[in-house]
Image (cartoon, rainbow, N blue to C red; front, top):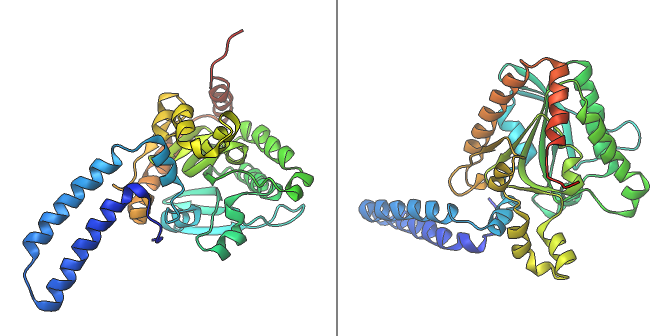
Length: 318
């Protein structure tokens, strides 16, 4: 768990500390405080439910970015009985912001792709804060083509603030790499399951985000731009991100209402960062159920449905 506490989490954390202090006093002095502790725990449970059932869109954005939230490798270690990582794009190098490889979930042999952030400063520098370079998208595509060759379904975990916007990334064809992935994923002849586990920003997320089903965890967001980016453009003030988040409708529930998300994966009460194992359990159950359904669909129909799915998103006037 990270030491960072979000503003709306402070009353919960304070009550948790009080309960722990009473338990410590009870253990140290042999005092029977079980009644008081039980009462506070009941109060804590009600407070958690009340707090997390009334979150604003901006608060859900903050939860999606919580530094203690489980990342791709945390889920892989919990849902896969086996995982072999694949490195490099065979053109330039190995982008640590994207993890790829072959895994086994129950009896299903799959290919997994996911954006990976770090927790410490050292880890974040190693993972480039979860912002992929072109070689990351090309590595992902290389592994997706292997999935197609060996007829294995693809699972893609999305959690990025966006593709890396540096000069080197642009020189190596960042836009082309993302565009190529959109094209190739749209017609890949194996099932593709998209799982948004944190934040999904812009083309950086979409570069590994075209699939047959889009599953979003309860406290995540997914949009063409971050609330801060939108606020900077519209209001010339990034501090108005909470206003932008409300207007953009970026949360999992918004995506469900808009017909973009196919299912919202529930999280443990208080968010995935409070219970990794339970969060992974929900994710695994949902993935397995959807994969079994997708594997029953003939491949030509699967690709046709996928293209139709994205063609129907949004609205326009002629």
